[in-house]
Length: 331
Image (cartoon, rainbow, N blue to C red; front, side):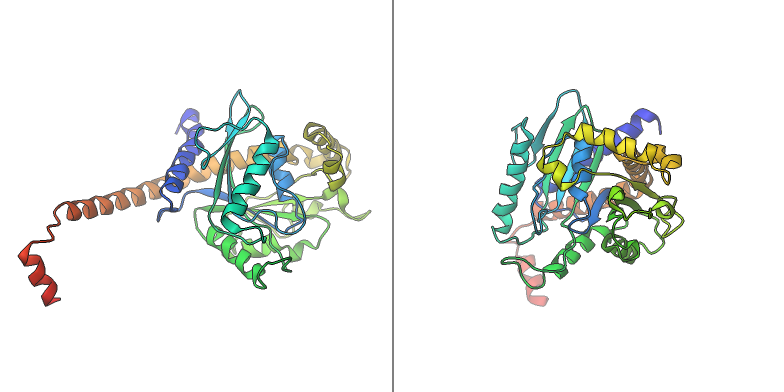
């Protein structure tokens, strides 16, 4: 498969994703995809916003992502966003994108911080992104807040499992470095469905917030808790940076400087940081689609054949046919 054909793979799956969503069901087919999993304060939102270079995700305390967000990033000269549920409307202002995500979430889940498995499909066109599709899932939580049901932890876990159990799904497990990595919620869930660590990609956030004298070098070098696809470390903006409206571009420069100057990470600086993570995910998803395509095509053709048989049977259906009544009586 040539480079040009490889580049077309992610847009192809995007079109299928939209078609399945328009049908009102995920179809019986499992699309090759990357699901983003992490605890509530792991820094998932910051990682995704850094990819886009814009603040566009809802923020706040408690569960912020309450429906799966299918985020399709498309390389383009112009910069704007589109929602599948707002046909024909282009969003130029990314604050409006955030408000639309909040409004569309509340429309389905209500105002009480409930969750729903019905996805929101958002496509972002930008010169700053690589072609990439990610599914942002609700953050793993332990304690219900407000009107949330007491079993909210179980509900979120079940929703995450719905996605990551699928063999065609790569798992982007986001874990903050300033917590015990052996107890990472994201890595634990990933291990349940992927015990060999074959389809899990590790992301370590908050490396700048580790206790003095400690570092995550062994994890980032894939020596501790190894994954076949390895780990990438990133440094996101702090809450103070976000509140102070620190520019994402400035944050990217600070991230680069952090890795180049840190004695534990400078030797692997070229394999760390947000731009490298985006490149890795683009390559991993493209290769993953290529590898799963033959099997996926066979399943799709099988399903089409089954639908054609149903249509044919319906076309020949004659309710007044006396032989049909006789058959019904004999059953």
